[in-house]
Length: 417
Image (tube, rainbow, N blue to C red; front, side, top):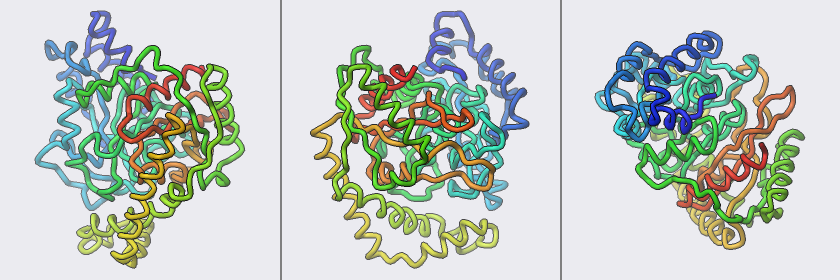
């Protein structure tokens, strides 16, 4: 994989140019794209032209290519959103985060594949680690492009588990920031209370580098971040984790303890665990409204899976939705109180390795609750399960303490290596 942080350092030192990196990405895309299918739209000639611009190497992103998930609006590329409804859609403006990437000196070589309207109908993308397995969803193309060494960075979105899960399945670092840290204007919404823009990269330091460059915030990771207290949590869904997932979580906890960090099992308060069931009510009520035009005017162009799901969502009353939101609010307060006893949570990223076949994108069992709570989440790669396929573990931080979550994730990454 391509390390964004290392490539940027090489560009700034003069060892590489942005065009050198663009050519390296183009070569990897030529070698693997036909079998992986990570891109919904691609313009490598345009990438080369932009990479040759003078002064680009001194920008925050140093002219690195960044993949854009195809639910984010782009002027230079169609935004098809994984749906025939938007086959000819050409936005008049870029999504805010796309502008942020470009302002920081990032280049956009193309759009990465997404599931239909960022829901569950699989994209055509295959997992670069084993082409017979799913890459996960809905940010399938972004995770796969980074895993295959085609790009150093890619944007994704998470409403349930669409950053952390594919990062785990494809063996890359994935980051879902605190809710609203990255603006979602210019995204095709699925659930406005949940949709969160995140990042994929080769490693945790690459995530921190990219977050700092794109947002302008201080994401420089401290070399001596102290000794954070780690709570090991298997959540209310713990019984659905595979033996390999349990083994990975146990190995991660042992590695942290061996590195001298305080690690202890913790059971989440009942008020926090109640958020797990509330997620579906919030997501589905909002999805039925967010996709009202598609439902009312283009229902025949929706997949059977999404059409059936939205049909069920139509039955959710405003009263049930409001109660679910109150449950979420209580859970956020209870989780904040729990953080008085520790600094970060270690838990599952996914129920196991990427499922075999392309008929499903896998389950978001260990992501939905954290998305609803708005917490920063990091998939830390480095462990494997059956068939040698990747299986990640997840660091969850306190809301708004994104840099601290990344620092803890880097400690874990180093301990595992």
